[in-house]
Length: 79
Image (tube, rainbow, N blue to C red; front, side, top):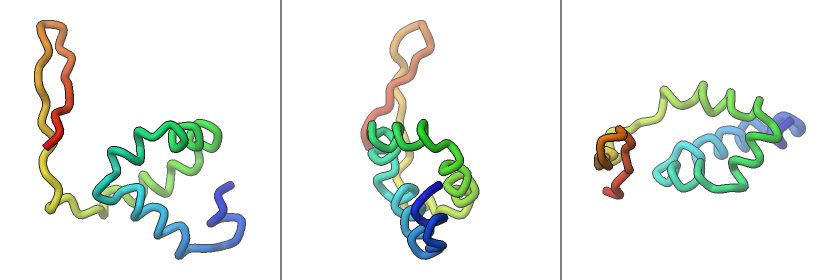
């Protein structure tokens, strides 16, 4: 159970989701402590998934990929 649920803090929940889905979301979701939290408490992912469609991506640069050989793997290139 998250702190927002324990203390009935919808503002905290909204702020956390906005931070996770914000401009630096790639860094946030790749951080080891974030991954560990989600592995320990998978239900925390549901509010993030529900909020994701409402995120405005119009100001974000497109993600570019490089092909790395015949094996089909792709590498993300920083914008």
